[in-house]
Length: 100
Image (tube, rainbow, N blue to C red; front, side):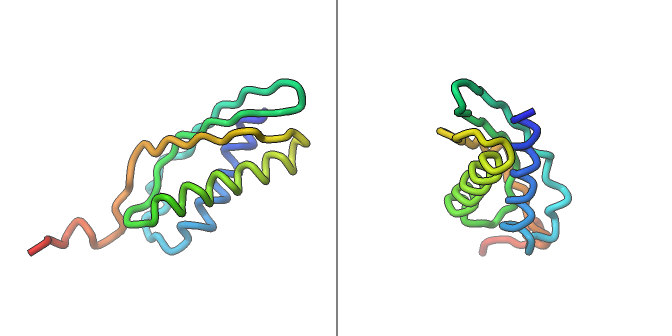
């Protein structure tokens, strides 16, 4: 249940952070795992991000949003949100440009 909420929160974060990406729909759905005990939870997320983007900023935004939303919706204290970026998905037009 907590992992499903984390996936939902990750999708929300991607929608907010990557709203300008025309290929957002081509990102694979995020996957999540959760370890829960003693009123706390540790979350693990695996996801794609659009490219180009500020990877550090996007990662922090996703981690912060997921932590906040999962805590709000479950009442758990989130102690950790680890993020694994599986793929960077090129934005439209980049595959046709060359460096000269």
